[in-house]
Amino acid sequence: MLARFDPWREMDTMRREIERLFDESLFRREFPFLDKEVAAMPLDIYEEGNNIVVKASIPGLKPEDIKIEVRGDVLRIYGETKKEEEKKERNYHLREHRYSRFERSVMLPSEVLTDKAEAVFENGVLTLTLPKSEVAKAKAIPIKTPAKV
Image (cartoon, rainbow, N blue to C red; front, top):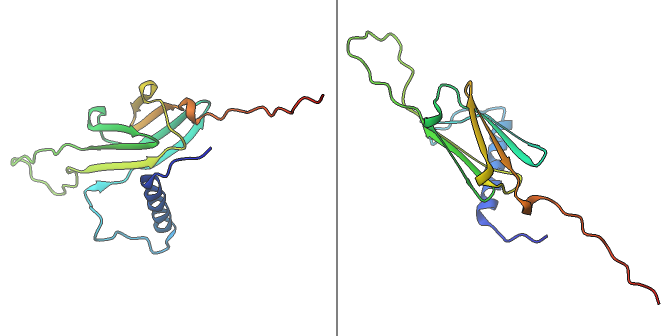
């Protein structure tokens, strides 16, 4: 099957390759040009029957803080933590909880039926069950031989 050229798919492939190179680097460190307000989230993506299942670890958030979008075969999970107001009557010794944004976009193995997708958030883990679209399912094509006369 021929696929139409999609520059976004090519760019996503390049981005994943660059991420892989950084992940495999012995000298992995934070780079000053990266936005420190954007936090990464670990993902597991696997196929189970006719579904693609995505598990994302997003501890400390509420479901209303998380947004999910699927466009074509690209999944985007994003949101933000709410900033807790600093109370003047408190004498903080350490204050590390703060506002932060997070976003993760990944290419799914195939397109999915978003209208039948399910999302469950439990104990800091977001589980998405995304049914594969009919286009993504392989179909066997029988081979016919011409009848001999």
